[in-house]
Image (cartoon, rainbow, N blue to C red; front, side, top):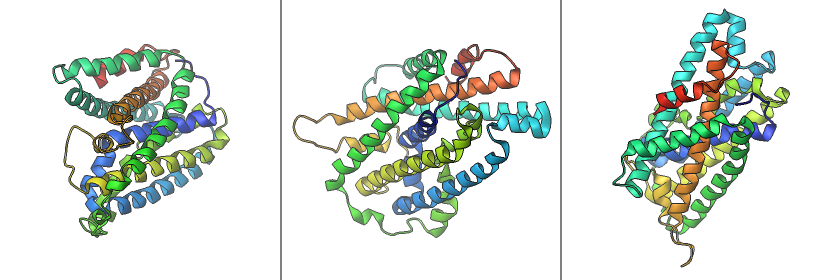
Length: 314
């Protein structure tokens, strides 16, 4: 993958698609299960925390304009610190991708392919991501620009389409399982902003690194809107009825939508968009991991790391 610099819109799409993909498949469900009727309040709370963290990131990044986390760590602690941090983040990104791969593969197996081994379904995702990761990185980021607006429009349509089935009593009691759960233990829901951690590697990839503050705030703000819309759709439709299930709630909520006789199987369209979004996110995650491994090993090309990355995720 070529190491070309990113335009502002490409960088925003990069961060947003990684956050949104995580919200659709996992973290929105976790937020509702954790906070019950206070999900929206908790969503606003973790959004405020995410914005504060983004502000701190932007302030600190101005001291190292155009430098990523690995560049800064090498400056502060030398090569050993750079390698340690690189390997830790690589392990985290691989672990995160593997959990989401299992989630979407399980969902596809249950809904459409009950007789198909989940290993086969997961391998198809890895194959698609591997092909995308070996292309020029401009292709991956341009695909993110196309996909994330579609996912945004979709979640708005889900919210509107289900509005007639909403039960606004589901937001009571306001503090759900208690103030402690909403504001203290509920802080763990900050992981809904899965794209935030990638900001640490973004400045060195930007064509205009001085725009990192603008890019970061726009990306986190868009992610916050998606989080609030998706959690509202689940909370007002189902309440806290969803426990741990392989079918993520947003997909189930789409099944309740009726836009007339012609548009009836919208759940299949939504799942198709989720599949596209996940392949894009998996490819972008691969880009980051491959770039980290290239940096800490000093190799000239990151393509040889594609197979190792996908094998570990698989």
